[in-house]
Image (tube, rainbow, N blue to C red; front, side):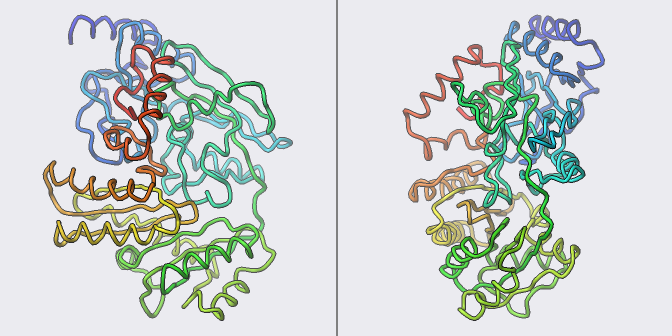
Amino acid sequence: MSANEFELLGALQQALGDQLVLTGERIPTKARSDSSRTGHHLPKIYIRPRSVEDISRALRVCNNHRGSTVVQGGMTGLAGGANPDREDVVIAMDLLSGVEEIDIAAGTMTVLAGTILEVAQKAAEQAGFLLPIDLGARGSCQIGGNLATNAGGIRVISHGVTRDNVLGLEAVLADGTVISSLNRMQKNNTGYDLKQLFIGSEGTLGIITRAVLKLKPLPVHRATALCGVSCYEEVVALLRRARKSLMGLSAFELMWETFFRFSREAEHLKAFEADYPYTVIIEQSGETVSLEEFLGTMFEEGLVADALIAQSEKERDRFWKIREGLSLGKLPHLIEYDVSLPIGVLDLYAKEVTAALATEFPGIHVSVFGHVADSNIHLCISAGQIDVSAKHRINAIIYERVAQHQGAISAEHGIGLLKRDYLAYSRSPEELELMRRIKQALDPHCILNPGRVI
């Protein structure tokens, strides 16, 4: 350690105590990388705060010593945003967890940032509510990370992205100042909406420590169906009809054939007798026109070629197990992309990218699936062991075509380190400059997640 690093470590130990400030072999190996598997280094110092005051003291010390600080939550991110360098200080949020309050009258939940999403969901359910935020990583991702990346997920069609479900939050600035804006009202028109500065900022403007989240009534009815569809135009028509006819439409998830077949076979699950170019999961929470009646009409009109309606929770879980595609993680050197484009060009984009990749990388595996109703698809690519130049070429194929179709290079996973150099494909020079000015105002010494986003 350099003299400055010794001073920083000593100041942190004095402010927080040896029990919360870990070094050397006490630092867990999980601190190397998020789920992108692109991080390679353990940080110099690893802090496990137990309170907001601990975080405030830690940041005050780091700011005074110009110590770069990386925030780590559930480590489920795919943009490298939580990956530390050797000289970094990591602030791990896992001990700052718990549901502090559920307001039955207002339908809100106040929760600490380190709380696992599924823990918060179950607490809401026990109180008779639905927490609308829902992701495939619900069992390990944390609320703070969901907010910091403005996570999307599978319920956006009915409940919006994460920021749409937040009423208030608390955050700690780079200099240790605690900004507590824990609003609990639906209507509050008193100046700048400060929470939106931090939601989606990926920890570059402040560390989110608490949030007030909206809750919805717990649905008393849920129906789920798996539908085979013959062409993309019929997928779009089916979505339009479902939005019009199905009250409580809560999910509309599309799987292209390669993804569906790979995931189904890897999980040893059966579905239709025939293969279809597109498979859709439709889920309805609440009932006016029943899902069965709706699908009967769609079958008669030719928009659905085949359909299976879940007859039990076990069968519903089987449908979603295919969609979650966890078996893709077994593919060697998997690269995952998360893009957003206008609904009308999603299939065209998927075909263009798949063809371009297959031409330059024979034998490449490309799986495509996504939320479609909110313009978001995911691409999972396995080209084997490739060098850095080949990885850059794959990135260029993915992102240049996003720019051509006026889309966004990240729909819900954030920018982090891995997409930073491509942000200009989706943001203008004026927008990027404004982001830099906001960063400079709130973090003038650039200690918070330096190098992320901008």
